[in-house]
Length: 207
Image (cartoon, rainbow, N blue to C red):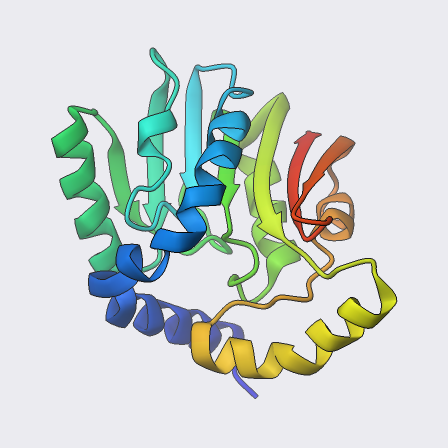
């Protein structure tokens, strides 16, 4: 069994390897996900914003004008591509390599924390969400777009069966209970909207 440190290192190596091809691999999904990204980022009130798991920068076209964005990722090759995209878009973004489970920020620094399709890959998602809560200001907002385990009994069971294979191939868990994890991490006022027959959730919560 991987320890937390080695689990995070496994994630880092996986996404470093895939960074070069990541946008091509995700191209079909992004035809649908783009509108969900736009909807999620339209809820960001501005101010100091942290994006956890920036990847190659797929969210950058939707960053709110006037906000100060700090974006992190565990994989340096992903960050390099995010930096190139920010430059192409003319965005001033603070990029840093960091583990979602161990954020190197002071308590209460950010007005918002945003992540899209990230906590499916964080080895300990509750620990990562607790860190997100820690760095939020009182009353700050968490905004997530995540795929989760289906509430349909048959589909949910199939996702459970397939999950070890998907984790091995793609590094993402497809059967997590992310809404429950958000509450377990201590967030309040949790609201959820569902897409793709309930498998994709847009989650908003407050510290």
